[in-house]
Length: 250
Image 1 (cartoon, rainbow, N blue to C red):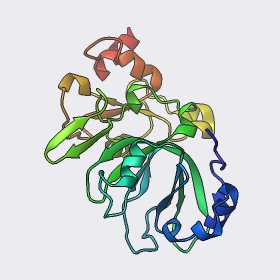
Image 2: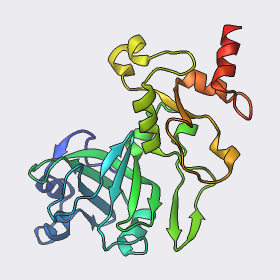
Image 3: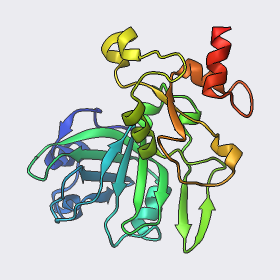
């Protein structure tokens, strides 16, 4: 797997043309409208938190380690491009910038679909292959349901449950980054590398519910450190926060 770009570096479209050797006659056009396929690779150029050059203002943004992105309004999940995204033959390179006035895009890595939803435009949640080996969150934290909708039916691609990343963020905004069990705050112990690090625990495990439901970030979720998170799940159903606190005191 060849990666021509360095995560975090900035590139113009002309830089990309030069690096991957795009012939002059194939430059421009679709390269300027959000995403395009060249050879077996797909290149996504996205504005975040601002309108693109075409005037469309999609809710493209980062949700923790994931990138929420929307296709062109005319591209549903049955379009050739979206079918290719689900079964790519090559790499999917993802670049973003904050405004159409900026010439340079930041390269974030090789994209991998974690969730695709048959909305209009199609919503995709991307993870980054480059980052997966460095991910320090628990397996439970990273279980995201790959799914799409066909009419009123739902097709499950993997037997797991969606972790709602926006709900996770709202939980942290409400409770902060201190563990609800042991009260550790990583920034206080590890300095800057521990800043904004915490896991989120579902008070009722989703695999016990057995269906999708509306998560209340305040009532249903709590921030916990990885150690306490693992201890909460030492039995099934999991220990409650209070039970684990009592075990620690004894």
